[in-house]
Length: 414
Image (cartoon, rainbow, N blue to C red; front, side, top):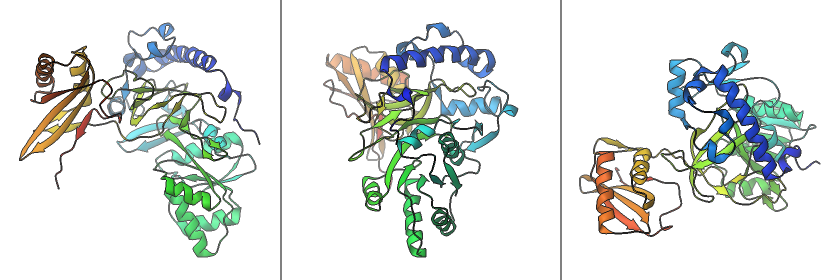
C-alpha cells in the first residue's frame, strides 16, 4: 500500500514554498482580472511582489463576516469567483447565510489527501455520513473519494437503522462523517445484529476526544481526523503511525496556512496560538488570506510519516473574542491597536470581569520596559481606542498564557 498520495507531499520544503508562491502570483493576476471582488480587495497589489510569506502577510485579510457582506452586495459569491455562477455545477448555503460554489468533478475540494492518509483506497466502499443537502460536506468527501477511485455509499445524516443496514450489506470498509455518528452506527449495527466491516475512518465537523478515538481503536477502527471548511475545502489532516496518529496535522498542498494574532493580519512566531488564515490555490474560487475564525498554532518540524509540509496543532477553538462591556463592543482589533501604538508592548491580554454590579477591564501587557509611566500611557490609549476605562498591569515577556486569547471574558451571569 502506497504511503503517500503523491510526490508533492515529500518534496523539499523550499521547493514547496517556491512552487506555491509561483502559482499564487499567477492566481493573483487572474483573480484581479476576472473577479471584481478581488480587484477591489487587492487594489494596489502588485502580484509579482508576492514572492514569500512576508509579502503575503502584507495583503489584506478577508474575514468571514466581510464575505457575507460582499455576497449580499454581489450575489451569490461576492464577485470572488473567476467564472460566472452559472458555470459551477453546485451552489451550497451554509449558516450566515454564506453561499459556496462547487464543481462535481474529482477532488475539487482536495479531500483526497486526507482520505488517502486515513487509508482509503480504490477497492474500498466508503460510507459517507456527511450531509448532502444545502451544505457541501457530503459532496466534499465524495469528491475526494472519487479522486481516489473508491466506491461511495451516500448515507447522509440521520436514520441510523437504515444506514447501519446499508453499511453492513454493502460491506463498507471505510467511514467518513462526524466523530460521534460513527459510534451511533456501531451501536445500531450491534442492536440489529449486523456485522460492520469498517476498519478505517476519517472524521471532521466535531471534536474527536481521546477516549472516543481509543474506543474506536478497541473496536478495530483506525480513526484519523481532518480540518476542512465549506469555503476553503481541506486545510490540514492527520496522518497515522505505528502507534496511532502522528502529532499535529499536515497542511494541504493546495493551501498556504498562516497563524496570525487575533485582531490583526500579523503572523505569530511558530508555536504561539493565533487565528488560522488560509490562502487556497483554487483557480475557480480563490480565497486569499481568508480568516477562518479558528485558532491553532504551528507545530515545528516535519511529520514522522515522511510528509514534509508545514504542520499545525489542529483546531483549538474560535478566535472571535468580541464582547460587550458597559454596552460597548470591545474587539480584538482594538486591543491590537493599543499594542501597535506602544512599541514597548510585546503582547497584550484584556480581561473583562465584574465587581459588584459593574463591568471592569484589566489589560495585561508583556514588556521588557515596565514602568508606571508606560502603564499610565497604555491606559490612556486603551480609553481612547475602546472609549472605556481600564486598568493596566505589566508582565514579563513570555508570561501571558499561550492560548490565542486577546480578550478573556470571565464574567458569570448565571
